[in-house]
Image (cartoon, rainbow, N blue to C red):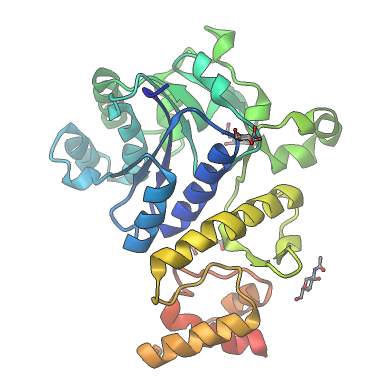
Length: 331
Ligand SMILES: *[C@@H]1O[C@H](CO)[C@@H](O)[C@H](O)[C@H]1NC(C)=O
Ligand SMILES: *[C@@H]1O[C@H](CO)[C@@H](O)[C@H](O)[C@H]1NC(C)=O
Ligand SMILES: *[C@@H]1O[C@H](CO)[C@@H](O)[C@H](O)[C@H]1NC(C)=O
Ligand SMILES: *[C@@H]1O[C@H](CO)[C@@H](O)[C@H](O)[C@H]1NC(C)=O
């Protein structure tokens, strides 16, 4: 159906990597819906090009520059910046119904049946099951609801500082009114749940349709050895990411997304997290010849992270920092 869409949000280049894998996983499972990504203004051009290939629509959202009520609301509640950007999905009135998915989710099966549900359908949050989790939800774009959500934000703020608090206090009858709006947990399998209730995972885990990579360490915070197909440093944090799902994420990223990134970046040096030591070396020397390295020395902690395979490629470990990382890597 042309007027139904999956929608996600990529506020920066890292979340954009997640969005690329999410789109590819939806396409691999033959979704018949449109794919839409909302992006922040800081997302780099080559990254936008890749998103343009994977998504039907790439929409830049700049709440600060919107000059409308969103802008005014934001002035009153500046702490809710990303939340306002996410609420923007209610303005997509070219679609009659949408499913929002966080960029740190991975689809394991066709989930088009979610469009049979009504606004606002979502899965319970395991931390407080009378609240829904706002990582995957069904909604109907509407300027009216958007306006009400903004007013609600402005007046009430968010009890958890993010969109989940806002949405739960706005859609406050979710817990009791209509059980069909409770999505089964298989639409939000998190590795936290795997470890906290292993027998249930053994019984139902194979039915999982969406995996949500919760927590601070995201798939793109790891690095991947494409020769022996293993994720480096994953043992660092066994409780938050289930190894098989993490591996699936990286396999999709390295096989489908990386070739597109290579085309899009052309001669510009960049890192994907899949490089061998030799390749990092090559890229570093290329970068080194283009721009002088900054003088400061990286902290011990970050060196350790790098050695454990957790590199912050786009931020601290961006191109002009690669040489130093490389030195510590080779130590
Ligand atoms: C998606 O469609 C293609 C072509 O119709 C088919 O070969 C493939 O098996 C389908 N994939 C899934 C996961 O159903
Ligand atoms: C899924 O469950 C986890 C906890 O296991 C929760 O923190 C997360 O936000 C939920 N996500 C979705 C999409 O419902
Ligand atoms: C893959 O290679 C790395 C070193 O390059 C090694 O540390 C790791 O144990 C290997 N993993 C597997 C599954 O062979
Ligand atoms: C993950 O990577 C991003 C971007 O490189 C960085 O901002 C973030 O701090 C990293 N998180 C952790 C827990 O290392």
